[in-house]
Length: 315
Length: 219
Image 1 (spheres, rainbow over the protein chains, first blue to last red):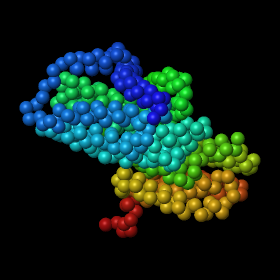
Image 2 (image 1 turned 45 degrees about the vertical axis):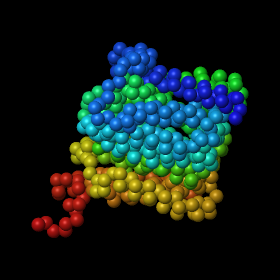
Image 3 (image 1 turned 135 degrees about the vertical axis):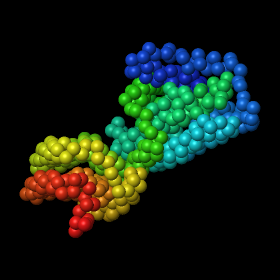
Image 4 (image 1 turned 90 degrees about the horizontal axis):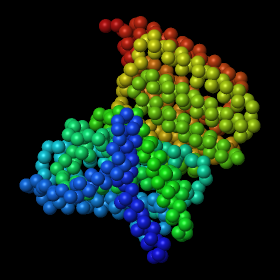
């Protein structure tokens, strides 16, 4: 346990907590610009969090302790996920625990808790959202696992730090299997983060909503935690994508200077990535919910192809 | 330098496979033709790159032939055919698409497993791509089997020829020029005859569903 590992670990968590709402704000801003609307400010998510934390939380009469505990569990899962993803540096205090499968497990744990909480109160919208969330989740998870396995095979290790170290040392020519894995990962992250082709994040009270239906019963600080967790999830997925497919600039050595340099590089990559996400959301239409299995099936298939191509071509 | 070009060839090969899968999962005929054109482009790029690495000028010639035929002429003919037949938005498969894709993944595994020992006998730099070419051929077969309409079947047949061409390029740096010219002309004549066929089928049965051809006698 070196001082460097402790410092980069603390920095990773602080940066994730601070940047995640900013990233959501940036994506919303870009989306509004692209759709010819006047955009909300970049700090709008922070204002929302501030407002919600100052409000009282209203609970349903029949809400069980699970309903009250879930926001904390979900938030904790997302913070831990952001902590083990090598977004700035690969020498993290939690690096020995930073396993690709554990990461998928963390996301699954959060999903189970938020779905149980949504069903807990017994409203129609809650259980509807929970079912849809589980439908999307059980289709997205294998695809995500295969993507991570493909990169793990390239690095011969399932440790995220080792994978990122191997990939950032690789040749500048992107191999076909990584391109396939990148496409599959983009599709999975659109579905997991309730983005446009699968779910519309800007919707309230619409019959097709997924994520909003889950958190409909929450208010006050619970809602604030869930909103923050959602933006942390988006941040976590962006960081995994950037670390796996664009690993340049991540600090792989122990030098403090590299750590300082990694932050502006990450900011730049997130700016570009967020703008691209907004563009993708603007040009695509939301699909029917019955098309989602096909969409995620395609993602799974591309991920499997990535793995097979890696086995055959060895590159 | 050869390493980078080799990577690019592998990339084109992977793209061919991806496009073959995209064709399987496509519901619309118009998009199917776009995908077929893109597959032709990937094939031309792969052939040119192989020709460049191995310094075989005759590969440039066959790449040019492929470009003219499969990227320009045949897609244009197909556009005309579907315009005349008015079947732009046709969508019908015999098995549903996720199942087809799962079967497709099985076929790809089979092809890779089959090609592995064969490609070890070959000495070309792109021998690894033999499995991909075989997979493309099998996927095109699958497409021909699972589609009930005439136009997607013809496109499946053309994609099959793409796969064979790529197999020849990756296993032996292309066939002799005479054979290649012969095949190219065959494909061209084939598409013309099949185009006439499609019109005849439509004339006879008022639809392009080839299941009508299964009954021998008119009731």
